[in-house]
Length: 271
Image (tube, rainbow, N blue to C red; front, top):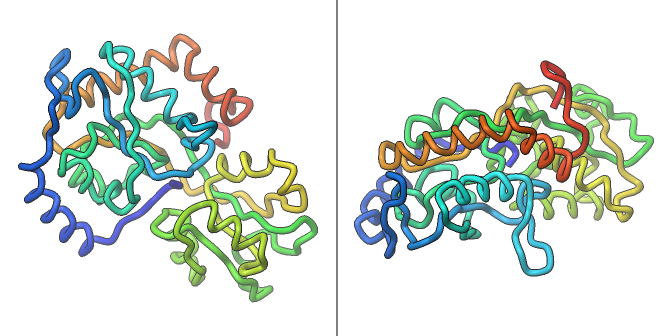
């Protein structure tokens, strides 16, 4: 998400449950180029919908930035991508992977030290920042401004955006997903929301959101990665890294970026 976050105690509980379920997982897959697949002829990915522009359903098909990149991984394996919509809690804790629900997890998940202790992760594929979204003309231009105005702040539950503002002493109202969060702003449940910058940019392309604007950019230094079951599929980690590097080298990454987000930022610049 957003970058998206986790609680240690909850992780431990879910991980234990997931490990016990792992024996039941695995499906009817096989091994392709040293990569273990839970389904025959498919690379199965888990995500939590909707999360535009990274993954969203359009005309009955899931599309987006992450989808296009994982399609490249599937193509390198000679298979197709099969996408599973699942609860974000099971993604960020590794439970979905451990239970054999999917081979790889996508969904704008920030690389964090606690996560890499129970999941393997690819090299970073996206530099992310957070943004505050409010009505045009809002006096809020920073998190301090939220405090000063005593404004009602909204955030997506379980995300690093939520963690970030909490770390700054704010107590946001939590919403289950990004669209519920946006609806909370539209309906006046909150005055301003925090969300990943690319997601906010996508919202603002829709004329229905014409009355809103980015109130502030928050540089949190986040990077997204693709996640794989811990110690179980090293060849998939290796191949995913190769695909990311190749896509960046041959211009494919740039095309995907501009297709879903906009102009590529200059090296070293903001996301």
